[in-house]
Length: 411
Image (cartoon, rainbow, N blue to C red; front, side):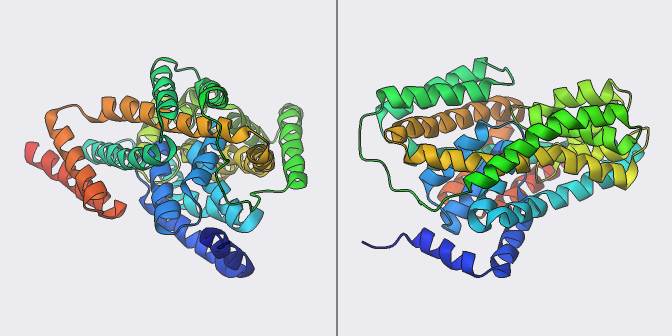
């Protein structure tokens, strides 16, 4: 039997040691500099880079990672990137992938927070609108590719449509978790019995490390609030606040806004205007939306603020995701090998397509396509990306340049 080329390449890379970590750093740094459009668009960029271009894993394996991360609290796209790094080079690869992907936007957000008086006036509406149209195009490409591969029959298409319909009307912070469980159950019940698909059997994580990670996460969730209430150090209180937000927010980057408002704004650390200015900046930048924590930590009215406060906030809000990504894959690997679970996982994969479709419709289409001109620009970008096979970076430059030029002409 022929060896799986993706697995053989991964095994060779694992033997390279520092070289594979450098490779991970460079590719995720490029993504951190160019992945505009928000969390859902990031999944499209990741798919293009690691499934289509580099063949690090197959479509089904990638969809399983996306499905797993959708069930976890925290920033879904960042956790997908962490898991890809973990799969490639263990916990060191996970850490390197996060650092490289987060570094560019974290640096810019902390810098903007330190210069908060100017930041709220530095955003260009046409620039932000261009990035939102780019997200429409990138997600459309991901949708087409994933739907073709993961919804090949009527039951899976129906599951995807059902999940998409439900997601458009069910906006609870736990909606994604509930819909993932529903799609897995429907897949187990309605998808025809067939031979389990061949996926890369190389484990993503180790069970012992996973147990240590989840134990540390639970311990920190219990101990940090007690320590923050017992000792006067402001750094400890800040770390506890952002760590709790990162551990408890379901629904990804956009949902975190509500928790930040209730925890940071209501505590008097920043104003509503500062929060919204930072949110707008995060939307306009590549990389994870959770780096808004760096902006808020550096712009806080009370110490720790500045660069030190921004660094604490960024580390704290992403720390739970690192522990969750180390803990979850061993259980997920076990589930993928369990008898009959491939039908449930096929349903989960269809559910991922449905969630992506719902997000593409709302908020991407609803908020981005405000007039026929927007539709024309998005359609041309989609034709260039999907039909013309232009690289995503070229689409970013083209669409944003058109939006800026149009804004300048109408000014």
